[in-house]
Image (tube, rainbow, N blue to C red):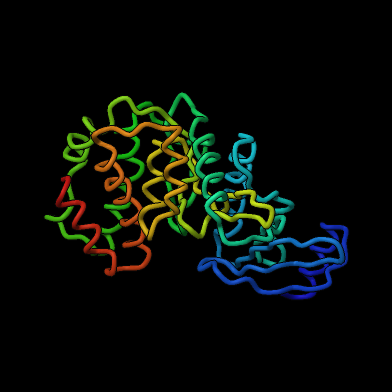
Length: 286
């Protein structure tokens, strides 16, 4: 971090910065812990062309979740561009490994978030899933939204990248025919949108925080599907969460179909190592 940016941050915080330390974990942006005499802050920075837009949308998503008063997100302090470097400044969450009781709190508070609803599926603006564009064009039915704003764009991108061949992906009509009976009666719920193990924190006092959201109104099981994709969360999390929501005979199928979206995203971002997983679900359901 250069001294000019450090000086700007000091002015924003109205505090003298005593230490700047790199923070590992992100694969898109650089991250730093900013320390002053009294406080600690978290900074993400990036100089790619769309970084400012990405950070503004991330800040918006954090605020959308925060305003529900169901589960905490880090407080956003500044989002700006300086010398062609975009940055997002937030409070620093001093975190710890999650205990069983922490996972229970997370499950309960996520369920409360999912009880926040809307007239439509989608959101009032598009955002990102990883570094890929995620369309949130509002729709009144979950079948139409999930087909046209989730699966189809990722399938089309995989086609363009020659990661899927013509006989390996279904038509939009086939997708909708498969999904109609599975998606009956689904109501919009506010989602984190990318809820894997790296996108929540437990503060030292046991408070759950959500980070790096890709928010929109969708089916609540989408977040659960993502939690189960790469290893899963604690049993305590699922037991507590499902005490707030009932499953039905189609829940396990929907979980796999929702994981298909994330696997397509990973296929398009990281390549052929995800091809087998994508193809397995496509063959099973479509």
